[in-house]
Every structure is written in structure tokens, then in C-alpha cells.
Image 1 (cartoon, rainbow, N blue to C red):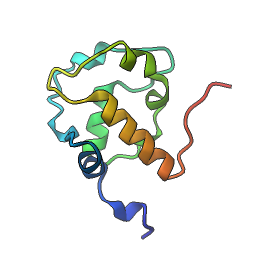
Image 2 (tube, one colour; image 1 turned 30 degrees about the vertical axis):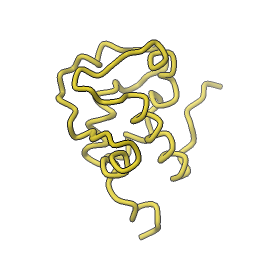
Image 3 (tube, rainbow, N blue to C red; image 1 turned 120 degrees about the vertical axis):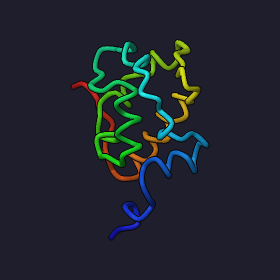
Image 4 (tube, one colour; image 1 turned 90 degrees about the vertical axis):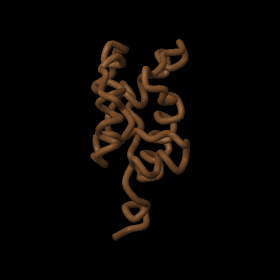
Length: 104
């Protein structure tokens, strides 16, 4: 086991780094309506994947194409800090050597 996989599940990494618990995603589906070109997953899908420690929480394009939405002040109905969670996932993806999505 390498040091990256021994860091713990994604939900715990996010919780320790941000204080945000993605397991609290209420699956209200309000964030499902937030879309930008290039997004392949919704915020809810990413948070549920992180809560289940699934790799697609780090390998999706949305993490790297959602800045416009985040900067426009979207919010989570359950009070999760979307910006902090997305940044924590970006940081973890980069730590694990997962390259940011970019259109060529």
C-alpha cells in the first residue's frame, strides 16, 4: 500500500481538511441543475462518489470546469461549502497525480 492510498477514504480527507462532511449530502438533487459546458458529473454525484470513496470523485471533468458556477455563488441546500469541497478534491487529485482536465 502506498502512502496516498493509506491517507484514508476521500470523505475523511475532505472532512479533516475542510470540516465539511460530504456524507451529509442529503441527495436533495438541487445541485443537479447547476451545469456548465464540460461538466460530466453534477456536484451531488461527485459528493456521493467521495462519500463512497469512489475514484470518479477525483477523475471527473467537473472539478476543473465548474469555476464559473462556484464564483457565481451557488450554494448547497444542506449547507455544504461547495468551494471548499471542490478545492479539497482538486488538491487530492493533484497529490495523487491525477491531471486536471483540459480541452485541447
